[in-house]
Length: 147
Image 1 (cartoon, rainbow, N blue to C red):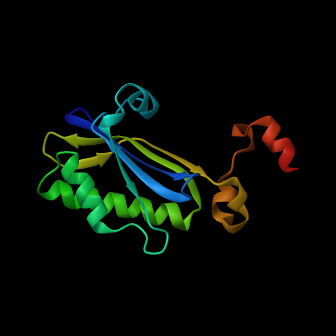
Image 2 (spheres, one colour):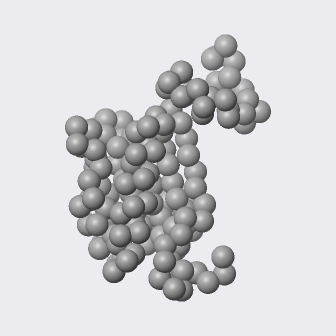
Image 3 (cartoon, rainbow, N blue to C red):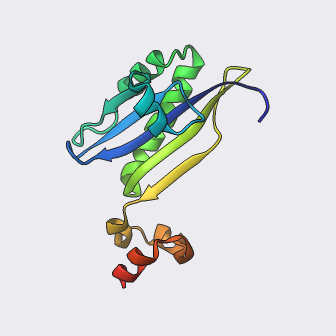
């Protein structure tokens, strides 16, 4: 993809303090979000998801506006946001990141790269995910402890 106008970041993680899923977004896509959090934390937007009602379209739209998106981009961002929220819940995800989420020169949003981490304690509920597990990618100590 060579016609990139801008790069964003979108991710979600379980906040252990509040025990809620928190979505994070930034206009600083394409770089490590940890670096952004350390150097310019004001560039990270957050939306806490209520576990009773789940992710809501208004949360996605609000985040999209704050990212400077407009028109059809807001609709595209909302679809991506709500899709990630559904995936987060359905697959027992511990962390999901799209980095970068690019804005192409034609204005459309595209997910170029993603990272997904499944909660290891929930693998028994996810047989399809467990079947894709690659033991060579596991931490040797954790693999040994799981035996």
